[in-house]
Amino acid sequence: MQHARSLSKCAICGKTEEQVGTFPMVVGLGRVCLADGMKTVKCEACGDEVKLITSSRIQGKTLCLKDHMKELEKYRQHIVVTFDEDAEPVASILDKAYRDGPQGYTLLTIRRGRNSTHVWEAEYEKTEIFQTRCS
Image (tube, rainbow, N blue to C red):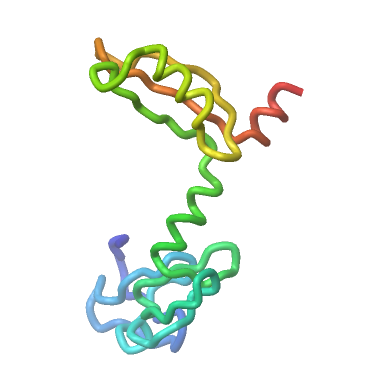
């Protein structure tokens, strides 16, 4: 929730809040009064009915929080996955990092974790971005 510095207006009905910071922020929509925030909307990804206050708008779609997180993952450019050498051998970690990487991502590097003697990090980049950088 972002803090307001002045009185906000509801993005739906235009009502002005009586005290600063009483209207919650809905991602992609703006601040809404509680009356409008408690109305239900339909998630365009999964079809669930959720309250407006617990939804978001991304790319013009109304989403529940679960699908909001999935949508954000789509646009994440880099992912770092950690492996513990105490739990599995290094050869297994290298193989697993190469074979079992996230779908749509290219493995960039495998390195020791910072200030660690047993943690390995596999860094992946979105394949489309990797290909445009290397072309």
